[in-house]
Image 1: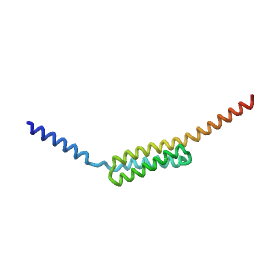
Image 2: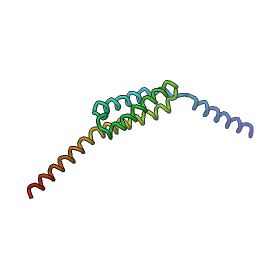
Image 3: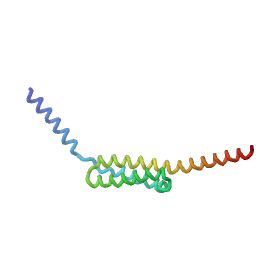
Image 4: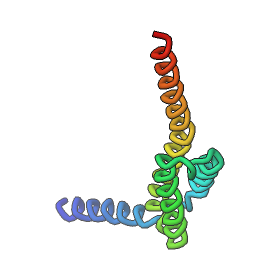
Length: 120
């Protein structure tokens, strides 16, 4: 009985180990999504907004690293890099849109305050 349990335990362990050796398919869909997010950030002018340019650079670096990992067959690691690249590209896009609006709002507020000061 003890030998049977040991044999079953080893069989389960062996099957679990062999299942982990199976590599995932290349994350081509995630790669395409990340590339699209990066293009959107670039087209929004993120490179011209310093706050956004930082995250645009991160996204570009992570995309290059992900492509290197894919070529090495390290698809799980590439998937993580692609998630990060997408997140940073989306942040760059949001900052590229928001920061100029914030600057314009601040300028208009200062202008309105200056006009109020002149009428008193």
